[in-house]
Length: 217
Image (cartoon, rainbow, N blue to C red; front, side, top):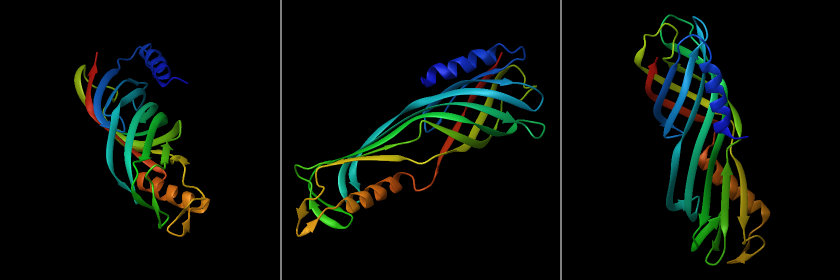
């Protein structure tokens, strides 16, 4: 399912509601920038559609004993329900995010250790791809988009977590090969993969944050 189409459908649907809503844009993570539309649905609740993207980074270094080139790309779309328990802009948030978040590690050769066993990766491969689930639940809190807000510029902020853990896929040429008297087994591959996965996210949640400006027409 195309995340952009889903979010656009939500935005157009919310835009048909008579009560004035907010268009907004900001910066944060896991997407560097975000855009969206928020629609108050009553005195103490509202709906939002949002798309965040722009994060793409790479870095060379030693990852869990293996010299590697690492890259991370992230974009995310979401549909959220905002509940305002008090007067003002403070809100509690629940929703669903649709994710395209991937991390990749490619070995670059040289001496390394796999599950504590020495190997020489020159001419060999040990690549790990980590993928976040396509859809996850979201829980958080925020400020802004409340009913009764005056027209014109405003401010919003969000902080919360998506609930899910990375899946891993490994491709390597060292399985069942012997280095310095040590044979690399599937158990070694699995243990090394877990170590690398845990270095990205040892928890079952991924933080999500944004801050920016709104415009109420």
